[in-house]
Length: 400
Image 1: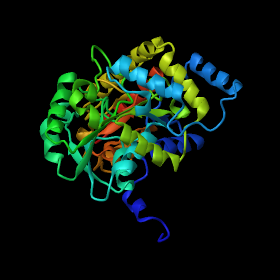
Image 2 (image 1 turned 90 degrees about the horizontal axis):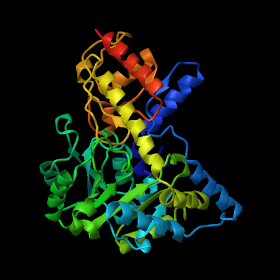
Image 3 (image 1 turned 180 degrees about the vertical axis):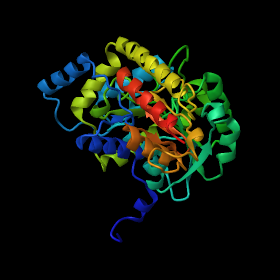
């Protein structure tokens, strides 16, 4: 349609949202579908956080907020970064947005010019390259492999950087792979960035509190203070606090960048929902004990899914360090015939045939920039995960 902006021709719809919607439609038609596409905890928001929102309503906290967020929340964010990440930020170096997605988008919108490049390790969250394209930049992909745990190597990063590079988008733990970087691995990445002082780091730490076993989370500006002045550290309450629908993301970084993002947001949405902001103050300052309990449940689910998928014919599933996703390879299914008679040629074929034959909705790996793989979210009940994995085992067993 000629009326629409040219920028839309460079952007694809979100594959994760599309899979979730497809699963909803099939369920509405009476199909028995298990949807494992959405990255959303199945836990309810803790009661103390809900109570804080109700109290905010009763106090009349229902007016327009400041664009960058209410001061109590920005102070709580600065305190969180100090307490948990050893990062010193004044509250004026913080900003609150309508979810982490808006934070990322505003940072790119405030900084990218046509021709600027953004390095994105693959596999990547589906929205990263689309945001870069919408903001006029050029995504440059640095591939990882299943053999190195889907982690960006210093050599791959160095090769991807050019004089046009403006940002590295860095996500640990990762969506979709669950890969999380150790302090040693972060320092190796930081050494490359120190050689290229024109490259800034946009670090997406949304899954910070969801790491397993004896893994210790670190963020890049924490392990390499020399990157502090060119790092935007992004986080939010969605995943760890089971607050996806409250739509609160936040970040901290250099004052001039935060001011520029404030200008963008002031002409875009203005401030995020006041009630959700007051709930987020309680999330960051209130009891944190439920996080460890939820994490233990997620770890049990991860172990179940990894074990069952590795028993499926033609599937190889690494054990991720964090988040609530696994990113198995379906390479062993490529070239084989599905029960429908169709030959599986791609990971997209694999997930389509799996949905048709067994009613299990997952997301194809090519949507995340690396295949032949698929992503499963294990943020649902153990019973559903066990049934879904049994169906996947049956499906791969029926391939000929």
